[in-house]
Length: 365
Ligand code: GLY
Image (cartoon, rainbow, N blue to C red; front, side, top):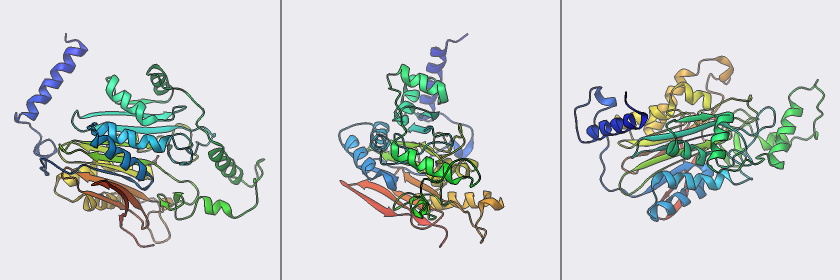
C-alpha cells in the first residue's frame, strides 16, 4: 500500500504530466485556458476597504515576493486595524458577542488552497489559512480545531472584541426586542447612521443592503509579471450572526477562486447568496469562456438574481434586498468589479498607483 507521502508524490507527478500536455479527458473545464498571457503588468485588486492592502501587495510583488504572500500581507493590514469592523481584530461579533472569523487563500501556481472558519481569538485568520495550505494535507479547518492548529503554529490567542465593536453589539442586542430586559443605551437616531440602509459596513463603503447587519469583508487578488495568480478573502462575517455561521469567504469556489490558467475572483456581501451559486468559481469559469472580468462579474450576479426567489430576500419591486460584490482579475492582468447595487467601489493598484474605481452594477436604486 502507498504511504501518504508516496501518494502525494504520485499525484504531483500526475499533475506535471498534465502541465506537459498529456491528454486530459473532461472537456473545457479541464482543457485549454481561454486566456493566454506571457508577461503581464503586476496588478492587485481588492474590495474598497483594501486600498492599503493592494498597495502593500504590489510592494511585495515588486520585491520579488510570490503573489500569495503579497495578497496575505496586504489584507493583514486591514485584519490588524481595530477601526475596520468587518475583518479580523475589531470585527463585529456574533449573536453572543464573540468574534468568529473566516478566511481562505488560493495559490495559483501550486493549485493550493487553505481556509479557516469560525476561528476565534486570532487576529490574522488569513495567515492561519495560509498555514493550513502550507503545512497540512487539508484545505479547511474550523472552530476549536482551527484555533488549536493556529496555536501549534505559533499564533497568539487574544481578545478580538474592541470597545467599538462591543458597543455596537450592545446597541444591537438592546434593540432586538422591546419587551426583553435590555434597555436601549440611548434613545437617538444615530443607529441608522451607524448601519445605514444603503448598507455601508463603514462610512462610504457600500457593501450590504439590509440596514443593520453589514457583511463587511476584504478580498484581494493579485498577478505577478510571470502571470501567476493568488487570492485571499477574510472576514468577521455577517454582524451578529448565529454562532457557528460560516459565510462564503472561507469556502473555495464561493468567496474565492483562483485558476492560474484563467484568473481570480472573490466576493463581499451576502455570503449565503454567493455560496448558493458557487459565485467566485462561476465568475472564473465565465472568464475562461472569454468574458472580461467586469462582464463575468455581472453575469455571476445575474446568476444570484435567478437564485433569489424567496420573498423575504426581495424588496417591494422584487429585487434582491441585499448586496453582493465580485472582484475579478484575469490572466492578462485586466480587472473588473461589479455589484448588485450602485455605489460600490473597488481598489486597484497598478503601475505604482493605488486607486478606487466605481464598480459596475445591475440595478438603479
Ligand atoms: N461575505 C461575507 C459573509 O457573508 O460572511
